[in-house]
Image (cartoon, rainbow, N blue to C red):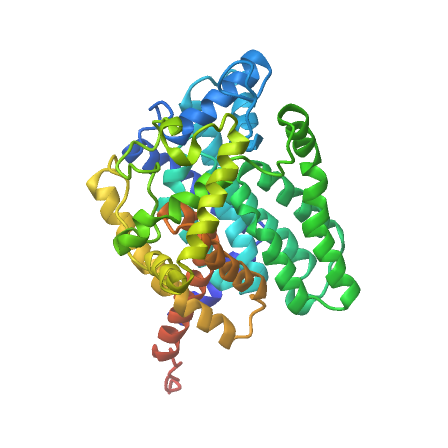
Length: 440
């Protein structure tokens, strides 16, 4: 065991190590995908909406499911990617999956690179392998959903900020920070809720980056660069919808899904969501007739509906503010509870993911303690975890939402696993050379 650790560190320090992780991740994605995940199935769930928006871009040159009715329900980044795949000749969901397994494999490589920067070579190798074989990450690579691309962008964004302001806030140049800001802007175009990276980086810069002018620089790179990239989208929304819409018109509805009377009355639902007002058992993808709901009577545009949802949620928080601490704790508890998989997962795959969920969460907690004891510069990762829990307290903590923090969980899990190997190596007997008697 004592000889294993230097070999692991040597492998992790090799200049091609990230490519090795990428190759392992690609192989596992192909094996698991074709074994369990039906790569030839058509889009399901949100994928139907994304695919419809992509077809509208390709066929009509507009962003909206209904001809002549532009929408801001979704950010355009992921539909634009799908449209590009379609224009390149990839009409099927299978073509999208093949692109996404490459993107997903890059997430594993980015997890390794980020871990090597912050917790050391040995733990990074373990974290990279965990990311390469993570069944949750692999599952979402095979869905026509935005999570796969969003998680890759999150991880590479963190890599560039870690490179720019590494251990102790020492800078290695402004280019990584600017690239990180550009990636962050693209990320918001893909998944607006992943914009928690903005306060993540701002908080970390406030406490970890010195001197103050450099702290200001990292804050500007994290805030202004994405804002500049978002300017065309904001201008488009104002032009076609006559309202200032910085992100989407779905934020109010997403807020309401996790903050309503139905969930408050049923603690078992805290951290989850219900699909539609007055019908918690509704099919999530069957749009309701809100005109029959007195709360939405007379509303004609998606902007008005979004605003009404926000008003309902604000009233809910106001009326139940005394219950909110317990309500938020219930959401956080959900994060540490093993959750069932999707009903279309094979039983064996569900079992594997549940064991994985429990193991990674346990190692994650131990890994934080191990990293702090070693004084590893993990402030960026801890800031991200903290803001993730803030986001969960406001919204929900489904497996799908845990996914945005999965690479960070795996880095701390890798640190814990490597620490365990170190402990075992310290207890293992060392080989001692025994001198032989001289001949004669």
